[in-house]
Structures are given as C-alpha cells and as structure tokens.
Image (cartoon, rainbow, N blue to C red):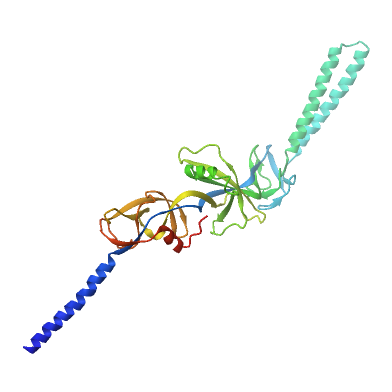
Length: 360
C-alpha cells in the first residue's frame, strides 16, 4: 500500500513538472516582434543590363568590283586614320585613266585648231564652243577615272581596331562587299533601358544629384575601374516595354571594353519619402514577396508587396504597405494567416539603426 502511494505521488510530480515547461514554451512561442515601415529620404543603387558599343563602329566595304590584290593589316590590329588597309588590282582602272587622259589631250588639240580657224573666220564661234564642251567632258572623264582608281586603295577613315578579315588575297570582290569592321574603342557607350517611373525620378532630381556618374559591372561581376557619365536619353518610350533608353559614356584607355560586350550599369537613384522595411520581415512564394500585417485585433494577415529597390538588409516598398501598417519582424517562419498573437513593438528607427543603414 505504501509503494502504491509513493508511485502515485511520483507520477503526479512528474506530470506537474513536465506539463509546466510545455505551457511556458507555448506561451513564449506565441510572443512576436512587430514594427512598421520607415519613411525616409534615401538613395539606392540599381543595376541595368546594358549593351556596350564603340563610339565609332563602321563596316569597311569594297567600293569597286575587282580582285583583292593586297591586305596590309591583320585581325585585331590597331590602325591610324589614313592607313592603307586593302588594295584591289588596279590595272583596269589605270587603263581607264590612261584612255581618259588621251581623249582629253585630243580634245585639247581640237580646241586649239578650232580657235585658229575662228580667228581666220573659217568656222563659226559655235564650233569653238562645241570643241570646248568636248574638252570639258574629257576632263570630267579623267576625274571619274581617278576616282575609280582611288577606290582600289582602301584606307582607315579613323583610328581604330580591325575586326575579322573574311576575304583572302585573290578573292573576287563585288561592289559593296564586306572586307572588315573598324571600331574606335577609345571610349565606349553603354545603352540601358529605364522604366518610366525611374526616368521621372531621375529627371526630377537631376539638379540635386550633384553629378550623373554611373558605374559598370562587367560580365565577370567585377567593376570597371573608370566611372561613366550619363550623356543622353532617347526621345521616345518603347510602347511595348514602357522603357526609355539611356546612354552612358565610359573611358576605355586600357582597351578592355570591346564592341558588343554586355554588362550592368549601376546607377544611384534618389528617393524622397521612401518606404523601407527589413528584408527579414518578408517571405517569398513563387517569386512574389509577402509580409505579415497585424490588424487591429492582433490577427496576422499575409499581404503581397511590390519591391521597388534594395538596400543592405532592407527593401524599398513600392506598393502594398503604408507607414501606419504593423508588420511581423521576428517569427515570420512560424506565423500563419489568421493567427492571433501577442507581440512586442519596436520603433522603425530603432530597427533600421540596428541594421546600420547609411541613408542620405
């Protein structure tokens, strides 16, 4: 009987000690940390996919039909303006020039003879005028023949780098056939598309930006050491995308950038009255961002938000929240819709200061 009483007491004690922690854990688990979005003037850096182009990039084409006699450059070679690049076989064009010069000489002699006859009143002055026209035509043929002959020598119109050479010596070229491409890579253009809201923010705050410098992130995720300048904005928005193209110019003294490269332009965008929240207050479902909003009855409700930008440890909210909303900061992973919770409220400034935001 004594053993039964002792056993019963032990069970009661164990039951009491085991149940108490569970209640405490449950009570502790239902305690959450809540805050609100912070409204602040700041700026953030956004990256834009860009296409990199040479400041000058042209196709070098044959201006005459003929055989390619000589190639004086190699692929990837840097050339100076006026440097001889290609020569077409000039024999036929030289013969045309010789013929035109001979016809001009004959026309000149004919004009001299006609003048003598006019002075002796043997022929009329109209005959002299006709002879003069023939000489002028012959001289025009000389100029045309010289022009055609000059087309057999193809020279660089500016300093630049030679691209691929698709034709070899001896190739029969048609008029207008591609010989190579010449690129001036001393400076480079980066073209990137900006949305309409971002364009409006940029233009509105242009005077207060201090400068219009941008950076370039290369394909290997390393930044170009030189800063660029936003120079121009296109005149129209693309109706299909709603974007407008910006153009930035970057120095390229090391010739690291080539025509056709890709990269990302990093542009700092100023923001007035930006609504920011900690990134850890969000969760993601199918590429959409959500937060838990606490209603007036302390009930948790999930809400989809639109992110307009990103800062270290923070998101800039474009749509979905207001400054007066209360959002779940800690316990996002264990909260569920329609849970009624108790919480501790932290001021937004306190939360942000803990994240060490460097706002402007």
